[in-house]
Image (cartoon, rainbow, N blue to C red; front, side):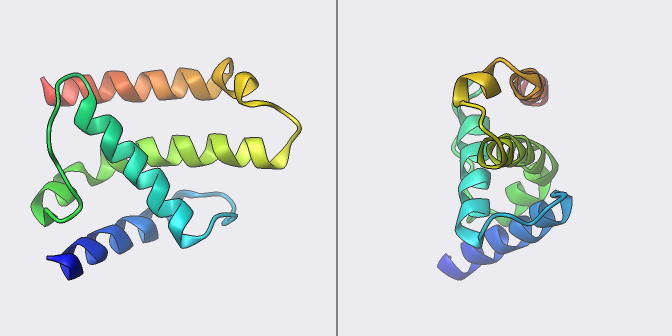
Length: 110
C-alpha cells in the first residue's frame, strides 16, 4: 500500500508542478500543498476519510485537490517573492479564490 500511496502523490505532484508558472518549490513542498488540500477537502463540509492510498478516490478527486493545492502554492509563492505578510494574503485575491474553492468542495460533496 505504501508504494501505491507514493505513486498517487507523485502523479499529483507532476500535475501540480505543470500548473505552476514558476517551479520555485521542492517535492516535499508540493506534497505539503496537496496534503493541505486533501485535509481541507476531508473536513469540508462534512468529514470524510479519503487518503492518498486510494487510487480510485485520487483519480476522482484529482482536479479539485489540484485546484486547492495550486491556490495554496501560488499564495505561498507570493509570500516568498515579496514583502507582504500573511495578513496581506488573507485580505487579498487569494482569500477570495480559496473561499471559492471551499464552495466548490461543498457543492461536490453534497
